[in-house]
Length: 462
Image (cartoon, rainbow, N blue to C red; front, side, top):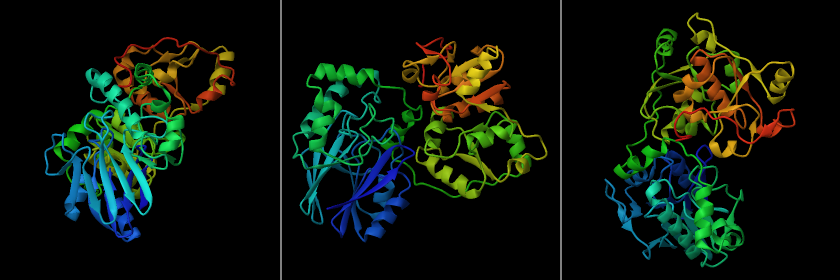
């Protein structure tokens, strides 16, 4: 048995090709299936089947399309009501692919009908646990709604305990837990793990009382991206095939017209480059691992997007990342120097500082409005004295509630603050981006204390 990992760092997930040198099984593939097809070709194996551990809430699956293209079985939990033909599986089922034996295990918790796959061959055994048992923790249990959270959390605890009875040498290969918001808590950060290692350190296996576990896990459930609400229905109905053809290239005049409208023109530039000069009316969400998550969290679902980058290759990278979460409606693209794209109009800009700069401004007698756009759980661990709090996903709804004057905006790293600064600037506010790491706030001379005021703007992070 050999395992090829196809990681998607931008969503914090891993997909797998497990094979015996000739025949392979794909587990939890992302929507851009060309990566998995490439992995199979590189390994010199034939994909015999595709399997899902659950209907995913954080990405659009490529499993249905992959199975259709190859004409192979698509294994999905029998209890799931889906809008396409599949090979239904349930706990206790056994399948054979080449020399690999695949046993289906019922592991409800992350979702009601979650299954895991125990694969054996060539003297190795691996558990592909999806969103059940993760490295150091388990998958979150609140994605089906508040009414189901308690029962799913109890099911998750029992599933983890059942999996812990497998031989200690069983290798563990989860789908979530590498930065995905589908994890219920921070994972251990291990590069690999086994059942024996999880027995010694996993949250679900080191808390012996179920009620204590339920309380602990539920207390740790933080906000998750808004786009999650769309993923389950898409995966249940059956995603359409991915189309990565380039969107229309917009001429400067067309781009200027769109910038003057209420639409979304997303600039992929690094945050400091964007701050130094950008198309007025655009929004900064820099290209990188967090792009898709925060586009999906900030941009209203179904809104057509225009992507602006330095090169067509940057735009293509962003397009692929967004397609993984179902943002297929790209209205157009533009690439090149921003001044050239501005059609003769001046570029907008705003200053960038750090926590030391904020401390110096305060020592000089200034009293700037400081806006913290971190999540509630981050804010609860400490806040800058006198700062206001409005989590980034709530910023658009709460713009009118902010006091007048210049706004200094921060988060934990500068990434979310950059998005917030661009939204504030687009709304006509004078803004200073604090591009800094949160642990540097107190050493810079800022007083960090219990949370201060929160701007009322609805439910945080939802």
